[in-house]
Structures are given as structure tokens and as C-alpha cells.
Length: 364
Image (tube, rainbow, N blue to C red; front, side, top):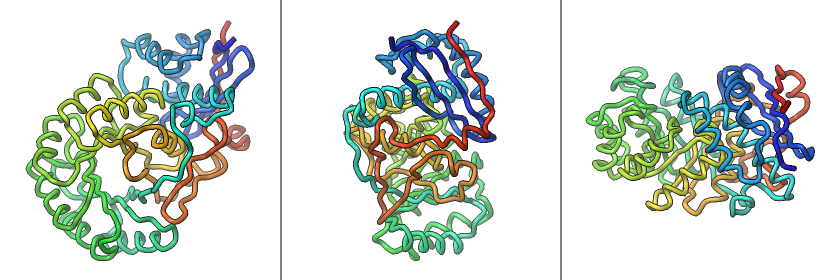
């Protein structure tokens, strides 16, 4: 029988892996949302596992929605961060059981996907940023990059005065017109200032303006979207289905960006992508680091009809998630291959699990 009999977590400082086992001995691996993984693991065992143990896993999306309802008194990010670990482990389990990749289970097929190099740095100078992006373009063949502008939740303030106005034209000038350029404001601006910055981006032929306003201010973001010609993107922080329906129906953005681990797993990210497809909105998942979230995003893009032009590929040093799985993702000539093996197509390394804090919830 395909009933869940155990849910395990393996946590290190920033990362948490989940293993789920069913009564017939099938198993799968998933990942909690990165950062504060120990808190997500506590939520997994105390609030999610009691409702999940003993459940049938033949219909993972339906099970996940039942779990969201079972935890309805505790809505929000940590429930979703915990549920994502179970959901992604169950997709892996089903893929291995049926000898199919996750994207094949979801109606797609493994393929090569263009990647944009995603900068996470605001402390870097514009000159240094342009230089390293040029270097990475030569080394990896990236044909698109995203830079950070403004300050996180900055109330219109820049990381330091004038940085954004210097960075936007410099990166375009140094990389040339053949490279697509994106920028992320991380909830920095009021609508008026967002429009000013967006006009500068339009002047320098940028193609994607991410999270210009505080993400909870949907009306602000929608105003910017209506005003600018450059496509506005957002949604990485959002996890409630009702909010996603509102984002798409307004529409608040031109491009939706669910994060598989933040939204509650692959099942719920698929729901967001399909909701957006009904309104002809492309989906570019948020995957800003090289933990399993990038593997999940590749499978998502290979599963949906409204996949955006690129997947997000983090370019920052990522020692904290290196050695987690194999084979590691690689950018070659600007593209990344969707792993082709059953399930997620990658293997969690036993050495990583051995150094993690282990916890288990079992069916009595």
C-alpha cells in the first residue's frame, strides 16, 4: 500500500532534506525551504507529520491541499516551508516508483533550459559587478543576467547614493545589446520611485523588473505594471492561494515567480503556473541558490506551457549547499539540462545526510 509510514528530516544550518517512506518500502527525497531549516523541520514534525502519516500518496496535490487545510490555524510561510519538504519528497517517490522524471509525471519532458546568471550582491560596486558578469559570460556562456538594485525593503533608499543609477547603464554598456538584462529591487520602492527606476531600465533596454514595490502592496505593484513598458515580475514571497489568484486576476505583475520551496512544494507551484497560463502570463520560478530548489525549478519549467525564457541560476559562492546532491547542475553555453533520471534525477549524497541532525516521525 502507498501509505506514508515515516517522515524524516535531516537539517544543517541553512538546509533541510526530507525523506518519506511508504508501507511498500518506496522512498523519496525532498527539501525544506532554505534558511532557518531547523524551524521548518520542527513545524514539519509537530504540525504536518501528524496529518500526513497514514495518508495515501497516489494523488500528491490533493494530499497537500488537505494538509494545508489541516493546519489552517497556522497559515503562512513556515507551514509552506515545511510542506514543501514533504511534497517534493513525494514527487520524487512517485517518479522513482514509475521510473519517470518528475517533469514527465507532470506532463512534460526533460530538456535544455537557458539560464540567467542571478547576482545576490548589493555590496559590490557597479564596476566590479559588470566585470564579473563579463567574466561569467565568457566562462559559462550566459546570455542573460540579473542584478540587484535599490535596498531590501529600502523605502526608496539605495544601497548607497547613486549606486542604481550607475549600475543600470554600466552593465548594459559593458555587456552589450546581445545580453538580456534583468533587475531585482526586493520590495524597495514606492510606485513613483519604481516608475523612475523602471524608465531608466527601459532606456537601457532591460527586460524584467522584479519586485519593484513591497510585495504585500499589490495595488502599488499593479500601478507600476500598468505604467511601465518593461515587464514587471514578482511573487517569490507569496504562498497563499487566494493571494495568488488576486495577483493573476489584477494582474499585479506581467511575470509570475513562485518559489517551489516557499509556496509549499511542486504541486502548489504547478497550480500557480497553471493559473498564470490561463491569463497568458509567463512563469519564471524563483531559484536564487543551487540547493534542490534549482532542480525543482528546472522540472517545473519543463512541465508547463507558459515557461519563461530563462531559469534563475545563482552565481554567488554557495558552499553552504555544495555537496548536497549529485550530479551538480552546470551551465554550459548558457543552458542547463533538466536531470533525466527517475524522480528529481539527482541523488542526495549520504555524506551530507551523515553530518546533519536527524529526526523521524513514524506511523504508530
